[in-house]
Length: 108
Image (cartoon, rainbow, N blue to C red; front, side, top):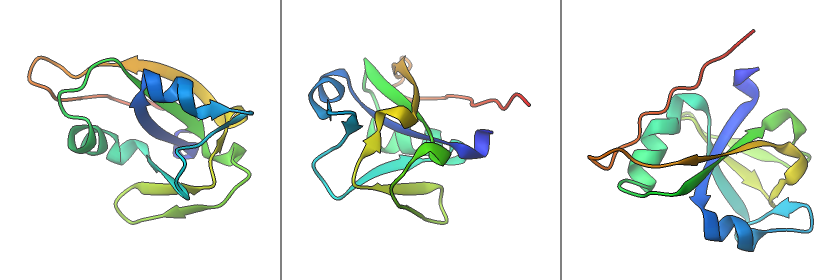
């Protein structure tokens, strides 16, 4: 199942502002997500030193809209994420050095 999971990080404020009408949308044509293999690189590149973030855990198989997958684990979800596809929202913080080290485990 872990291969169906993708992730997107954002601030708590943005989550509250942007999840309207059953869909999370950034206002852009696409939302950048990542698979588990690219998660720490994504967090450490885009959110280094940040605290009080929300990590959306999204079931890719529940998305009704198109996705574009790149070779480096980046996944672009087009036209928003249905809240039905969001399996969990996890609060995360960087460590004392400003980095993230999150492990995603698969349980079969």
